[in-house]
Image (cartoon, rainbow, N blue to C red; front, side, top):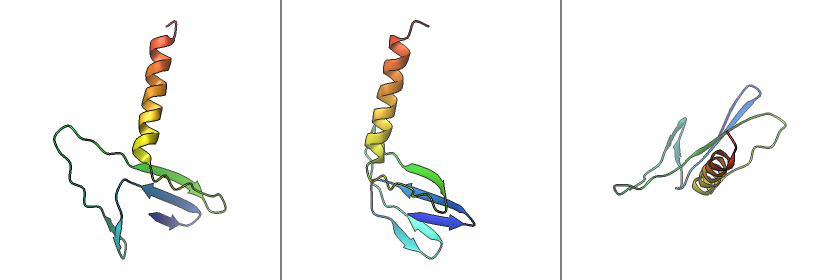
Length: 76
């Protein structure tokens, strides 16, 4: 989903198709206990290309894994 205001551009990506009705966006997601989902929100400006992250859950998982590896392997 893409939103623009002035020179600001926001891209919101999630794990399910987005239903857009005017200025309202909706997702229908069924989760079981213990399951989680991730959304990616990216800010950009007009003239810069914002990426569309269809796999936000993988990106978040990679980031968490990197931070955990960094924290557990540092000398701090």
